[in-house]
Image (cartoon, rainbow, N blue to C red):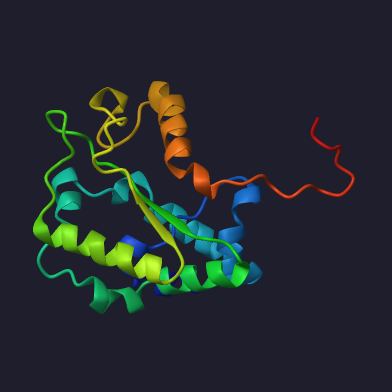
Length: 184
């Protein structure tokens, strides 16, 4: 998929491509092929840079009036991601992170945003994937946040344990490499 195709994809379904370790650039290779991988990574790094972050209020309203999940999903990379996951024999899990709590509660979600998330969940599940939503999880508290919606470095171990516990059923041991010693 070309960078221009990704640029025209629905913002809620654009892929996030890792910037560094070669062990994690495989998704970019799957999407763009070996020849297009460097361009896709460069585009993704620019597109997801700090200068492109949305203002918090704008992010909350991203799925308000005028957003039609059913009408826009076919113009996104989500169908391809789900199709490739099925073809590869694995279950794609999308995670919707909780916005920064306000007065001990997750931010209010508009009816349009709730419908969008509902429609997204239905679509993902109908195509063999999972949508996990952290919104309202009582284990994710305000003191875990640093700036904006980002988890503080000091809270990352706790958040990682919560994340693992919530999605434990999806994790399985990696296949043994031949010649590797058996676990004792």
